[in-house]
Image (cartoon, rainbow, N blue to C red; front, side, top):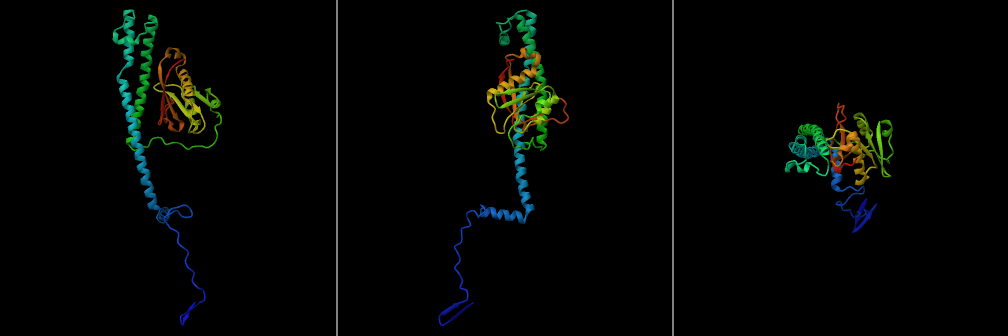
Length: 302
């Protein structure tokens, strides 16, 4: 209530000056900026439109991932096809046949690198035939891998996303029962890591299913055989020396009685976190698909 007479004013409750306003450019009390507050209000007011926007972002991310994986698979196919064209098993067979026919090691100059003159005639002959046999077997595995990659490329072209990482579980590493429940060989790697190798295709798959997302999966490239799982803590790095030890162990398990014949051979070992490895549905041979793998080359020493 306000009254004025003769230049005098009387107030029942005199208005108070407004406090200075804080700038709205900075974040609010709950830490949100003005733009974020407006965006939150918009999502609350029109949730369907917000979902459409989020969906469009997810679709673009999916398209980028498909394009990236497609390029990676196609490059791998190109390398495999180039390797298959070399027909190395045929060359080793030709050298072996020449040695057997001529009964000496004085092979043509272009084949000199296939013969070790410091070794005996019989040793070289057996080695050349064995190399031809091994490379033929490896070629079959390489062709199988090529067909698998080609199928993955077709799936990517159809818009199917590659394998997504599985859920992560928190907690410290514990020695799992996989080594006892599954018929598997066990190897202690240093003080921190334990590796398991399955004795059959069924065991390999069971080991993989029991592994955690961040455990490591190992396998010899282009050779059917044992899979290895290395248990580790989440985010922990396995030293290269231990990876090489595990690789030699897997190679011995893969080759079995023929391990001595493989001595000195260069082998490529595949590594991937178990979250990136998935069994092929309906396959009874224990084959898998994988991505985000790394490789390590070793010289086999049985």
